[in-house]
Length: 206
Image (tube, rainbow, N blue to C red; front, side, top):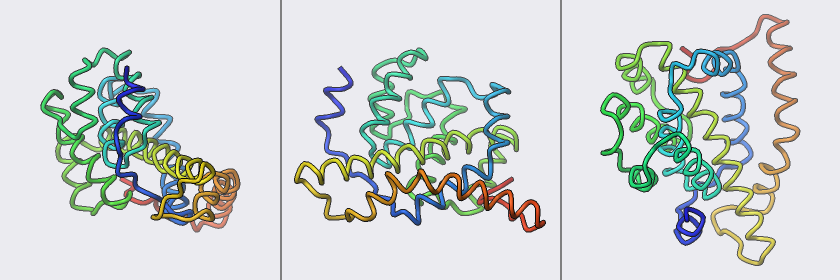
């Protein structure tokens, strides 16, 4: 059911250049400690994490992530009506205490992964440092999935003779296959920075 609905929608996909994708990867990989902690702590429920990921995906327009997280949300116990509305950017079905995080997730995606510090501080005021870190973990993770998925989709459509005018073959190839080189390169740089004492704080690190 969701496969049919999602494939019929005309998403306004957000395209990410290799440079932008690299920055998203750096931001996520610098926060691996927070990722491990979020997974262990279970401070954020499965339902909440899926709402966050759908909120981000609604902005970026990745059809693969939309389909996958719609299925995950169903398994988590979220109703079909709420899933449909969330994937349209409507959070009226969501628990009131989660709404601020969902709107922040939207804004994070709209800013291309570069929200201002005032919005981060507002999130902290609503949820505290620990929950804010967890929320950012899920947002960063789905941003990577959305960005890669959209560029893969653009490359696939180009191969099928339907190129996206907002991007180029080199950019699509650079994200889809360049990520295989980006990840180890980032890890190496992080290790070198740590050994040299030049470690810089991650983007929006708390």
